[in-house]
Length: 458
View 1: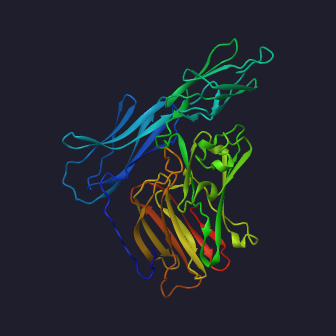
View 2: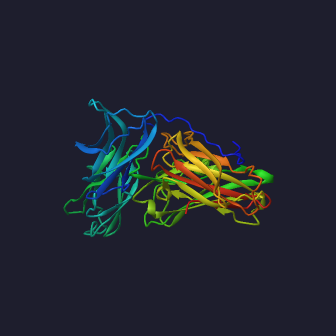
View 3: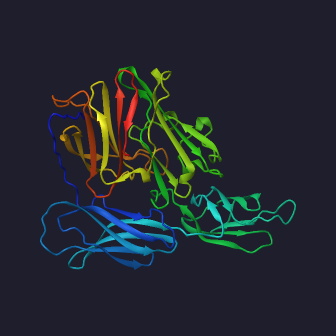
């Protein structure tokens, strides 16, 4: 798709009522006792959008019931958003439902999602506190005198996850043990440690088993975006490659399956059971495949801060001249809920420019309004509605949606005849559905040296 800047273009396409409805919470991963605020946003069928909701609790379900006005409304598809405080919830797995209530009493669920509320604290620390229901994850348990040595050799304490004994228990010292989580049904379970000859030390609902067949729950998993994973020829004889790096800064090992499912080819021996503490995993498209519009990682939120990321793209035909360009690895807290603005992008003909827009929730068909503005005189050069697409390609079974929804477009003109050599443009992306978290960047590549610089949200 070639963007033409000589005329301002305005394109609007219809959006079905109720599509792209979202439920978001603040905090993203709440603990018991924390006050939770819920925001729902979407596209409504007409101008009479749902009213501020009332909160109804039904077992482990929280219903947000919004009345629909009975008045005659313009049949204009309308973006809407509503925020309500639901208070604090006890630890457990909850279902949040947004319900539209018509004036005749009919109800319909227009958005739904799960919410895992963790205990605020326990008698010991569990890291990670998340594993697939198939088990096999090595879990570090740290607590005061949980493994006292009363005999030589020391007898290991008994560890149970949801009443099921750990597959293996290893003593590190009196205050630290490693336990391999057994298989268990999905959900929050108690963790119990029984020192030899001692009493049970219980951490109620201290561990969460997830179902790999389900989409990653946003309250349990942080999505991390590698904006590009590409290897191959480019313009002017260039040959590009990408290298990603993940460093484990924790004092305990982190399973690769929780970081990058299926990234290690069988020919190289497959993935190790975990990235050890103070160790690094590096991979390229040869390991993972070509992902021109990015690849998503899913990382348990409680261990996400322990991982450090790097992503570089470089031209192999000129690798002696420069190491390459660092591309931002995007954790979900870096996204922008609402408008994304990219500034100071050159129009100089010696460069080529590419815009990339991402939705980390990978919702195919998400729409946003794009504007390109000349900063010198605020002239709108391009105005259009864009659609973010995901092709749903997978490297794992079941599929955890490794590809984000994205939109990619060159920004190479032709520019208006009065464009100056030193002109700059600004790019604004505003989601049609309010408060949708987006991320975007523009790559600017020198046509001669192939050196790449980027403009990203600051």
